Image 1: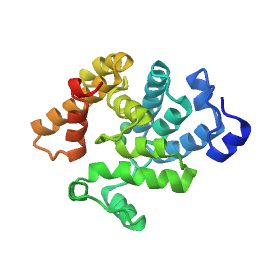
Image 2: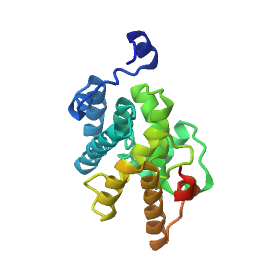
Image 3: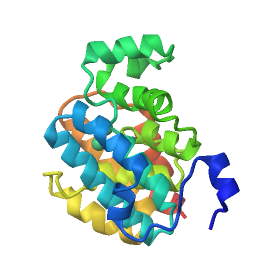
Image 4: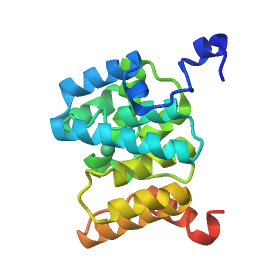
Length: 215
Ligand SMILES: [Fe+2]
Ligand SMILES: [Fe+2]
C-alpha cells in the first residue's frame, strides 16, 4: 500500500480498488471520461469502456497495478477523434519525430499523439501508462505488464466482432505473453491479407513473444 506522501509524489491515487466501478467513478477517471464523451463517437467510447473493463479484469489475474491499467485503458484512444489532418498537425505542434512507416500510416498516429495529449491535458507522467498508450497499436519488445494488458485488451474486448477476440481474452488470463504473440500474429495476418504495411514493432512483438522465447 502506498503512503499518502508517496501518493502525492507519484500522482498515483490508490492501488486498493476492488471493483471496476470504483475505478471508473474516481474523480480522475470521471475527468477523462468527460473529455472522451465530448470527443469520441458513442461506439468508440463504448470500446474504451470495454477495454477498461477487460484490461482491469486481466490486471487482477496478473497482479498488475489496476489503477495504472485503468488510466492507460481510458487514455489509450484519447486522440482517436482527430482527423488525419489534425493528427499530422498535432505531430508538428508537439515536434514528434516519426519513423518512415509512421509517416505514411496515419492509423498509427493516434497512439503517438495520445501520449502527448495525456501529458498535456491530464498531466500524466507515469512512464508505464505512457508506454501503454504509445504501444497499444503496434506493440513493442519493451512492453511491460501494463502495456501488454492494454495491447491485448484493445484487441480482445468483447465488442470486437472478429472471432479471435474471445479466444485471445481467455488465453490472456492464463498466458499473457502467448496472448500478446497471438494478437501480433492476427494483426500481421490481417495486414498481409489486405496488402497493408506492417510496422516493424508488430513483427518484433511477434518474434520476441514466440513461444520458446517468451519464458
Ligand atoms: Fe487505438
Ligand atoms: Fe482502442
